[in-house]
Length: 351
Image 1 (cartoon, rainbow, N blue to C red):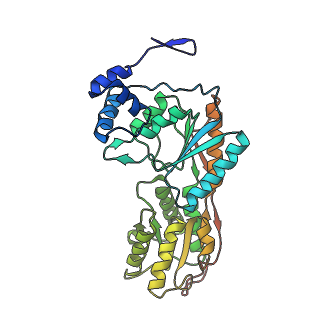
Image 2 (cartoon, one colour; image 1 turned 120 degrees about the vertical axis):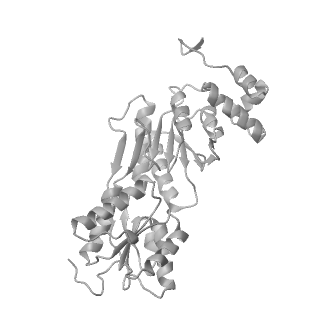
Image 3 (cartoon, rainbow, N blue to C red; image 1 turned 90 degrees about the vertical axis):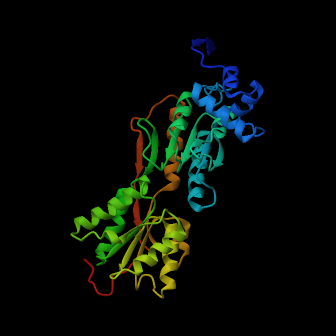
């Protein structure tokens, strides 16, 4: 038995048992558990597998009730304006709550079939009281690890549907897709394509579903060839737009499921000598700074990224205080921002 905060709890396997199982010394196993870098990859793999197999639970070095001042933010990357908006929202809300934030990028990716555990162990080593994950795709083992360590966490725009009970914050993506398509329909477009993100990603699937719902409500036939997936990649969006333009009956408008992909759409149209919006209307999604910088300025669906991040931080603070939110899913509203990239098609009358 081990004693924690005056209460006795059943002890799991010791570090010595893990070391013996992995065929290493106890100091080496300790290095892996504590996220040290001076361990050979093969040795780290054996120790990590032993940790998972034996269900070893690393005891935090901190008392969360006594050190509530530090939280972690794990983002997909730091090289885009999306992450900048998320950081702004978290920083502002953390300042109001008197918290400090540690930012890490790309740490939830997996190598082969095995999740990287070192960054998870570092969370407890530095005494973080909670974690925010943005655009993260956690494995079942990673979810289980967080639950085992009783670390509160909130997902910001999760890639996949999170397990039951996981708290997440996102945008009203389905409604945003409806709004984008309805705007183009109101201008008189009926040949409306969509350049979507990943097929399996929650937000992308919802935006496409909203687009299709708006077409159905307007009595406009859905054309499967008008739906192209570009994985939220600007270069792939460029290629998918060229494919749309090569169709026997190309679209007169396109709903692009991210502003970054819209840049690729603009490039493809320019290469074909086509102009926006005279030859094709374009609607984006996100309302990133790029939407205002490109010419013509992009009509887009605004999702409140900074507000989503701030809301997630406030929910995390409540969970750190032991308060469980009534709903595990919070959705913030989206709205259309009209600029100069949409107009009526030349051969139609606005509805």
